[in-house]
Length: 214
Image 1 (cartoon, rainbow, N blue to C red):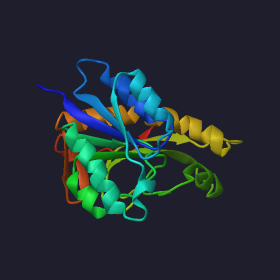
Image 2: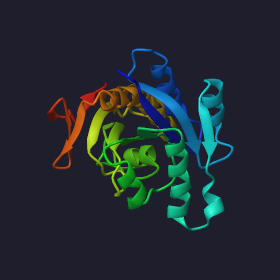
Image 3: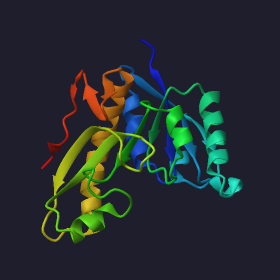
């Protein structure tokens, strides 16, 4: 069975990209990273991709002013040129329009550093600490037009420890991100995920919402 052709969209260092690249080194892994695209020309993750022999492209959003759809059409052209079948967002700091999301409905994943639906958006670790949360974690979900709101594929929790700072909590969550993102992409590439009634099913059964990683 042919491996699914995957593009990873990044804006920064690409640590989750590195985890996906590592997983895809296994010939038995059902997905192949064929393209890494960044909206930031200086993103560190581009160098990671090149070092792994993966094609890269830059689509700088600034060149399109406030025309988000024109930016996304240029992005879509890159994806089509490389015959991409699945898309993973990995620290991609652009809010996508409904037009782009529709092109990849059911085929685009995102990783978010919280136990969604808690702490959508940015600064999740500081917000979790400020709220007195005892558990925090990471979520892989399908992308829908509403930010951080798509059907959840995988979640894993970590305990919030006494004395935690945003940085120490972020480091613990990042280890979870690097573990569950390759797992979720594997499930999608194997055709084992389906969306029904706004929920994600794995092998026809409701996805497990949270696995305690403590």
